[in-house]
Length: 103
Image 1 (spheres, helix red, strand yellow):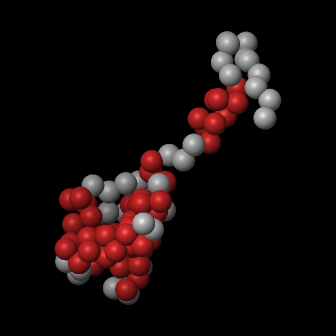
Image 2 (cartoon, helix red, strand yellow; image 1 turned 180 degrees about the vertical axis):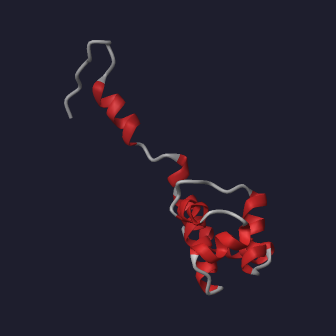
Image 3 (cartoon, helix red, strand yellow; image 1 turned 60 degrees about the horizontal axis):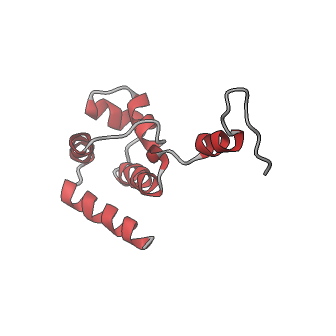
């Protein structure tokens, strides 16, 4: 890769590398969380719209966190678990299992 200096004296390949770096919202661990959230919803035989209704949110809320456009904090994950009918402790145990599979 050829290094060029822009009119502003900035290395272009450095800027390209920064723009293509994986963002934290799309980390491997975050993707594992998204997959598990989707899986437990499906195991409960709920569509996104059904879960959203239980949460008092629009369907796009569920879609966005399942697709990584939005992150959930621990209290929101707890609410999702309660709406699905899975104890938070079980959800956390399953998530830990998935995260340790990579190690």
